Image 1: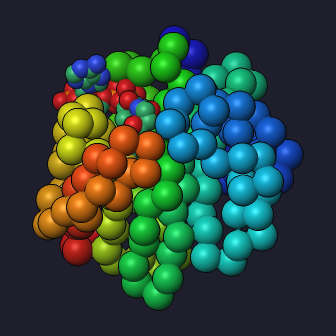
Image 2: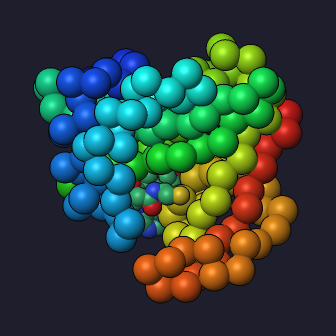
Length: 148
Ligand SMILES: CC(C)(COP(=O)(O)OP(=O)(O)OC[C@H]1O[C@@H](n2cnc3c(N)ncnc32)[C@H](O)[C@@H]1OP(=O)(O)O)[C@@H](O)C(=O)NCCC(=O)NCCS
């Protein structure tokens, strides 16, 4: 595999990211949603490109010293090769450079691959939101790392 390059997401990426989002998530954000994020001062979004094609993206909102992860995704064709791990590491680097010292997110308890990935970055499950996911009523696990 050629080297994957990470950079900040731009408004021009919104179309491509929304296409991936549609393939990956049960409740996808639209192109307009990502476009809006590019104007959100709290938002920090990155993409991973392989040979000029976006294959991964991640984003978080950073408010004071706290980062809340909104997206972490790798194109299904490219999973299981370590890209998700590099992506999440790059997101943490980006939010830390904006002053975040803690990071939190919600994840489906059934998403064992993502949970394992987050645990490898020191996030721990600290609670649940009952029936959080509207598509199937699944709870969300709340994960935190307060010592970035
Ligand atoms: C979660 C996700 C980003 C992981 O991306 P990825 O590129 O496959 O991740 P990696 O290859 O870096 O693997 C991360 C860990 O999961 C393990 N893993 C990856 N795919 C796996 C699989 N199918 N079964 C079991 N373990 C798996 C890896 O071995 C690795 O663990 P290790 O560091 O102990 O070896 C990706 O699966 C994805 O985009 N899923 C759909 C979107 C999603 O659920 N996002 C998270 C929402 S909270």
